[in-house]
Each structure stands twice: as C-alpha cells, then as structure tokens.
Image 1 (cartoon, one colour):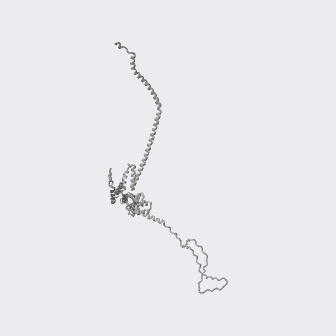
Image 2 (cartoon, helix red, strand yellow):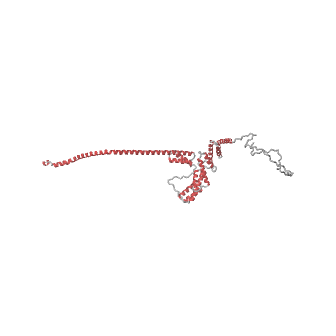
Image 3 (cartoon, one colour):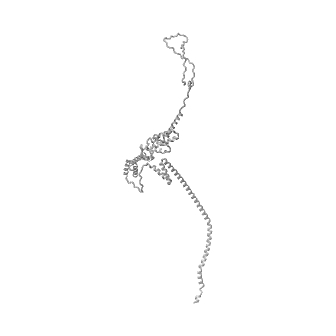
Amino acid sequence: MNQEETQPMPLGDETQPISSESDPAQGQNQDDDNGNADLGGTEGNDSRKGRSLSWPLLITISLAALLLIAATSAFGGYLSGINERTNYEITQVAQQVSEQYQLGLDDIEANRYELARQRFEYVIRLEPNYPGVTEQLALVLLEINTTATPTLVPTPTLTPTPDMRGVDELFSQSQILLADGKWTEAIETLLKLRKDEPDFQTIKVDSMLYVALRNRGVDRILREGDLEGGTYDLALAEKFGPLDVEASNMRTWADLYKTGASFWGLDWGQSAFYFGQIIVVAPNLRDNTNMTAAERFRIATIKYGDVLAASKEWCLAQEQYEAAFALGEDTLVQPTASWVTQKCTNSQKKNQRTQEPPPPEVVPTGEVVPTESPPAEPGPTEPPPSEPAPTDIPPTEPPPTTGPPPTTEPPPTTEPPPEPTSTSTPSP
C-alpha cells in the first residue's frame, strides 16, 4: 500500500495538469503584451491623424468665428438704425402733438370750440397721456354743450332690451310726435322704423323725416343758438327735398354769423362787415355764446374804428363810431369818438383850403389886353351913290346927241365913310 501511495504519477499526467493550470496566466500575459503592443500602435496612428486634421479644423473654426462676428455686427447695426428711426418718429410725433395742443389753446381763447375739440382729440389719438389734454377737452365739450338740446341718455346695460314694437305702431307714434312738435323723438322713431322695415311707406316716411329735420334745424338756429346743429339738420332735410324760403334764409343767416365770428378778434373790419349784413334781417340771432348779432356788430365797429383811428383815418373811424352809436350810446367810447370827429373836421377844412383855386390876376383898367392879332387897317373906299329923292315933275327927255349921254353925279355928302367893323371885339 505504501508503494501505491508513493508511486509517482506518469510524466504525461504531471505535465498536463501543470500546463492546464499555468496556461491561463501565460495566455493572459501574452494577451496583455499583445494588447499593449496594439495600443501603442493605435496611439501612434491617432496622433499622426490628429496632427493631419488639426489645421483644416482650425481654419474652419476661425472662419465660422469671423462670420459670427460679422453677423453680430450687422445685426447690431440694424438694431441701431431701427432705434434711431424710432426715436426720430417719436420726436416728430411729440412735436406735432405739442403744436396741435397749443393751437387748441389758441382756439379756446378765440371761442372756436369746435376746432379746439378736433385738435385735442387728435392729440389724444397720438399721445393719450399728454399732460392737460384731457382736462382741456372736457372744458371744450362743456362749452359746446352748454346751450345744446338736452337729450335723454339711456342707461348703459350689457344686454339692452330690444324695441319690440311693430312697424305700424312706430309709424303711428311718429305721427303723434310730429303733431306735438317733439322733433328729436320723432326723428329717432322714424329712423328705427326705416331700419326695421326699409320699404314701409317710403314716401310718407321721407316726408315726415323732412318735416322733423327742417323744423328742428330752424328751432336750433332761432331758439337755441345752436347754429352748427341747425345748419346740419337743414342739410339733412335738403336730401329729402328742397328747402323753403324761410329755412333757406335761416341757414344763410347762420352761415353769415359763423363767418363773422370766425374773424372775431382777428379782422374787425371783416367781422363788422358780416354782422352788418345780419342786423338788417336778424339782429337778435345768436350763437352758443348768447351774443346777438347786433351786439357783435356794435363791438366790432368800435374796435374797427379804433384800428382806423390808429392809422389816422379819422373820417372812416368816425363813420364806424357813428354806426356803433346808432345801436346804443357808450360812455366809455364817447370821448374817443368826439376826439376823432374833431380830427376829421380839421382834416376836411385843411383839404378844402388846399383844393381852392387861386384868385384870377387883376388887369389894370384902361389897358386893352389883346386876345387876337389886330386886323389890318383897310384902305379908303368911295361912298356909295345915293339915290335922288323922287319928285312930281316928270323927267324931260334930253335932246339927241351924237356923243355919249351925260352921267348924273350924286350930290356930294359931308358924312365920313363908315369905319370897317371887326368880327372880334377886344375885351376891355
């Protein structure tokens, strides 16, 4: 048994397990060596390839950077140009807003409220937060609507109740309103009827609209002093038919009043001219300032007289003061008018002295001033023969003779021959 236990294994059996146990380590070492060798070769190749690709990559990156810088600069310049243009537009708008606001203030001072309203609304459209424009617009609207016809403003609701009245009921209601003289309500009812049923009794509805617009326009001009609203209503009425003489005259007078008021404070001569035409036919015509045409004419003529007096047009200024005093005396203006009248009188006397002809030159008596060349003195002439006086003794026949018959000479006269007369008598 000991021999079996101590008997050595065969050589082949000894080497196989050893080789089997030692091969993995050796293979691993060999693989590591081979791997290191391969890795070294790969790193060498990569370094050579990296060096060969580095220059084109750097050029590409540089070009991209330059393009990026150029694009950034161009975009910056574009933004700068946009900002400059925007700032210029803002400056221009601000200048226009300031100018229109100042013109609106000037219109308020000249009582041109409608024009001032338009200017302030324009300023609000361009610059809603412009300082003071909202307050000025509110004042202008207050002045415009001071004497305007009050209208019922419906309470604003989110869902207004529709008018469910029938067409016939609207037509009947319009007739009642016209009979009562409620022109505004009649117009609103007729417009509602026209909107709901455009073809309903077209001729009658047009006639009713004409009557309502015409009468409301006349009332606004005569009773309310709303000249703008009155002329607008008459213009609308004229679309339905020609205006009658009275309505046409009202519109003409209102236009004259508005034209004269447009020159108020700017050209007193023109203002006096236009109001002078109105006072003949409608002296009590007024506008929303409650100044009648007669009062405006009186003030305008006084102001125009002051202008003429300042220009030393004394007589023309006197005419203006006299026209103003024909409507009523003014104790404040009377001293100026008297002084202008005195100036006019003095200037007229001075003009008369300068225009008188010089006295004729006195010629001494006894001297004849020849006006024509004296006629030539005629030569002596023989006096004409005088006929003998008739006698009762019959004439005796002379005895026949062979010579010529004797001639009978008239008796001599002692009177001198008459002096020749000239056709032109010299003046003494």
